[in-house]
Amino acid sequence: MKVHEDTPTYIDHDQLFKQLIGTFFDEFIEVFFPSVHQQLDFSSLKPLSDEVFTDLIHGERRRADIVMEGRLKEQDTLIIIHVESQSYEQKNFHERMYHYFSILYNRYRKPIIPIAVFSYDKVRDEQDYFELTFPFLHVLTFHFFKIELKKQDWRSFLRSNNPVAAALLSKMGYKNSEKVQVKKEFLRMLAKLELDAAKMELIYGFFETYVKLNQIEEEKLMESIQNSNDESLEEFVKKLPNSWRDKGLREGREKGLAEGREIGKQIGKQIGQQIGKEIGKEIGKEIGREEGEKIAKKEIAKKMLSKGMQPEYVMEITGLTKEELENFGSES
Image (cartoon, rainbow, N blue to C red; front, side, top):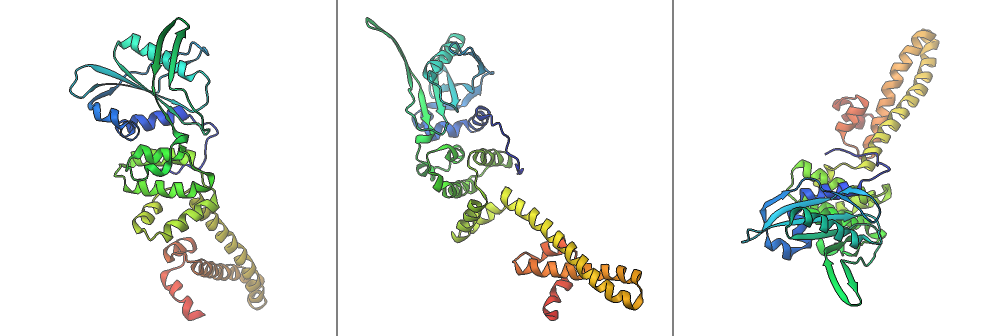
């Protein structure tokens, strides 16, 4: 699984949702529209070529997020399923959905199931229909399915064992104070899913895009996981990328090497001066430098071991042997 250390300033929300829902379309319909899921023949589903819509309201041209063709169970009639994700507020979005519906219907002349996913961070009451009426005539009412993620109670999805539900916890209605708990439950869900590496990375990367913990929050998360006595979860989490943990290891390594160089310089200088009085300045400097580096490495190793670091890691950083580490006890 790749580590994404730098967060881009621009996030293509539509592409993220398209990739998530497109990859886990069956699971998406199952978790949010179970009545539709019961009727769909998923073996017949196939994506249609990208549809380009021209927005008559704003003069924009954009591609439909997801358009699938398939059949209902025990029926030969083909249907179209159109899923549109909306990451920002738009006053006339319901009219735009009808416009997209009209384009698809005119092109394919097949029944269409329209779905809108609202993923922005505000709680709103989005209109899920478009009407065209006169005082003397009701021309039409167009309805579409909608999901307003911010209104979803994230706790109600924890037992779903559904990868889409796990990823979308990141966009549901939780308090800022619940971020650590939300990520812990997400990791618990992820650990139970039997996914290949690519799909695992997709789910994890999607969640990490929207739920960002600072260093203190990450430490609280790890402490909570360790205190849960869930060894399988703890082992699973250790295998995941963690920007704060990796940053800490890098900083610790750099700090240790810097301290070692400084200690080496100081001790080497002192020993060099002492030996230099006896066998000469030049030889003293060389011996002092070597002895100083050895002592510095031992000092660094002792500090690292006292902080609970694994001997293998200490040996890798300092270059000391296993026997040298074991001799620390007899030297003290």
